[in-house]
Length: 363
Image 1: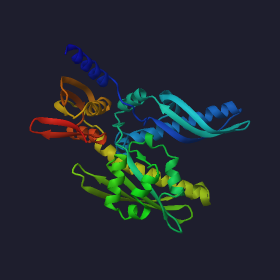
Image 2: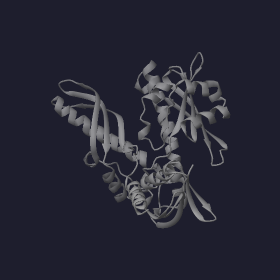
Image 3: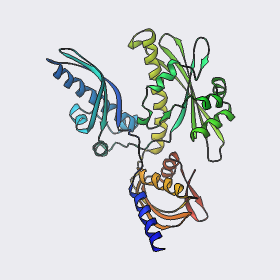
Image 4: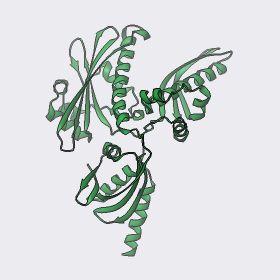
């Protein structure tokens, strides 16, 4: 019996101390760089320095709200500060001549240095992501409405980096199962049975149906229906509309490409703004909460522990008692209780008030 308890204790400690894999919202990709210099080496240095600064601005805008930047008197950072944040860079699609250097830059920033800087600036920010949602990019072309067949709107999402977004929108596999589950007409008409089946297939609680069309060369109109399910599995639908233009980047297919990329960015930014308004912590009060973790198997326990261990709001998750179907815990967290509930729910753990007190379960 003692051996079994020792094994359980070691397992619990391992789960407590091993954070789960997390997507890197501190990485910024596809930053165009173009530098000139007395030599190609100097041109490269100039391009990377400017691109790193641009990527740092993208990161700050990703993690913070415009109103907070304005209220705090946020000043544009300089290239020296941006360079201090860098943890690593990658460059692809390089082009070079004797005095010019071009490419696409990816910068991974150091989490601790970014956090320290934003805290020093007293600029509220959020780094926790929402749960993955599924996106169905539907292209309303001149001949028909296309979902699964190749189309420029789908390709825009293929080339994106949703793992770096605060509100990741992932593409379905587009395999036979998907094609049998839903078609373009059913998606546009918000067929609840088809959408519910697709959500169950990917274990998501939100599907975004994004219908895009080119009304004039380079001018994109996009209507997004955001379908979600609450705790009682009731369906909810919200709408967003966006108009974008890519003609400042060329004509024809090039203008359409940039217009579509801007439509995707506008949709993601809208969802991220909603999440930041809910999740940004403005009160640093530390709260202690006693709760029960309820589960039916060790997989459920591991899931609850992983979510608590990786939550940026949770400072400490202490195990007080452990059994085959439940654990008593003491949680120390920052922010409001509603923020904690919302953040845990995004990662599949529901915190309920019951007659025995707060209970955490896997949804």
